[in-house]
Amino acid sequence: MRNYENLVIVKPTLTAEEIQANISAIEEVITSNGGEIAARDAMGMRKLAYPLGKNERGYFHVIYYSVEPSAISEIERRFRINEELLRFVTIKYDTNREVTAWNQLVQKAQKKATQPAGEAKVEEVVIPAALEETEEEE
Image (cartoon, rainbow, N blue to C red; front, top):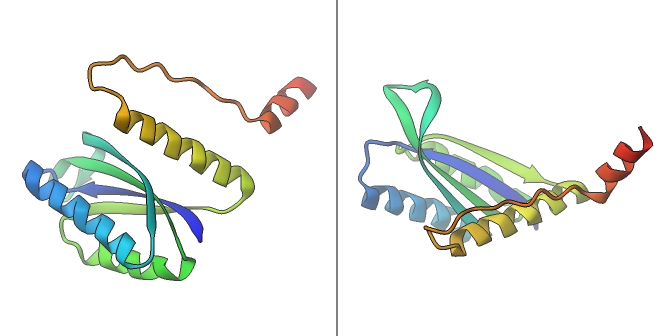
């Protein structure tokens, strides 16, 4: 199984319940195709860089999961059919460096999900050892 990330943008004209129902449907598509969801990151309503149709805003949601590569075409096909999605992008994490970055993103999303809403966010920047070596050589 390979690691993937999906960013989906849901129409802003939906109610909060409809948005959550759409997110649940998206996650169901992934799990019904044999995927295991590692983490979720609800980024909330954001302004788009440019209007998509008549929408200038969208609800952003990121899903980190593992699934067999053969299932990706079916997952993306189901995303294309869903008229409530403005856009989606699937990112594959393949190399060891990418998988390490995926694991860090999953941990960060899990911390964000468990962190109380009022608590201040302090992020720690982690520089991989491979990058530290190249900076020292210069």
